[in-house]
Structures are given as structure tokens and as C-alpha cells.
Image 1 (cartoon, one colour):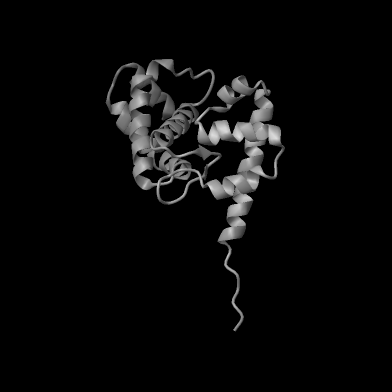
Image 2 (tube, helix red, strand yellow):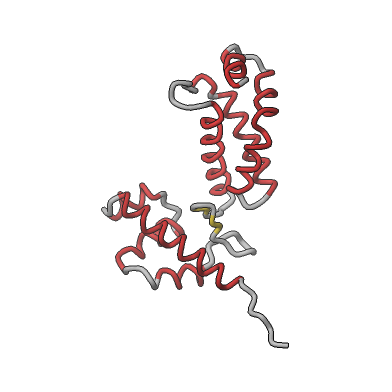
Length: 174
């Protein structure tokens, strides 16, 4: 079925998008819902992804990956773009926001930042507060990109643990 859809896309047949959505729409929507914080954003990502699929169909190379994988990678990039436009920091599907203005929770960030080496705090400042990508932060600081990604991953894990602990309910004595 996928080969037929790709062939229709290459023939500029608009029915290919309908078939593509019927084939992959539900699976993609389920994945996209995990990438963005709201259903509205997920719907926006889906729409933009399928429009991109139509516009960029000539760049798909079946020798490199399946069409679904190509489409899912496009959705992942689109989700990141949609979140950034909305001012939401999304690293590793962890939304570092408070409920009022979609900005990182400074108290959680500071608590975690106090646990890492001082020289890496600048990375977190650049990525979470200044909006740098990991590549831009590596270039700006001279720290290897792999180290930047490792430290960001560490902070995300620590934040997730901190959030999980703070959201647990303490049993009340009866």
C-alpha cells in the first residue's frame, strides 16, 4: 500500500494525501500527542506535517527509509517548531513549563542546576532561557556537542525525577 501511495505522490495525485492520512493518520496522531502538550497543537502539527509531505514529496528517498519513518521524522521536527513558536521548551517530551505562561519553572530548574557542575550551568542557561539549540550552545561555549547533549539529558532526567517526587501524594494518617 505504501508503495502505491508514494507512486501517486510522485504523479502529483492529490488523492495520495487522503490515502496517506487513512493509512497513517491514527498512528501519527497518537505519537504527535506525546510530543506536544495539547490536542490543538497536535492537530496543528498533523496538518502542517501532511502539507509538508505534499510539498516535499520529491525529497523522499525510498532507499533510505520507509515513508512512514520519513513522515514521522517530519512530524517530530514540526512538533518542535510548533512548540517553539508557542514559547514552550520541549526537550525529550518533558515540558518544562508552569501553567500560566508556558515558561520553564525556575524553581525546578535552579534546584537541578545546583546539582551539576558550575561550568555546565551556562549550557542550561543558554538552552532553556536564551532558546539556543544544543548545537548553538556547543559553538558558543566551546564544549563538545556530545557533552552538551549529555548534560541536557541529565538535567531533563533530574527534572523528571524532581517532578515525579513533588507530584506524589503523601498518605494522610487516619
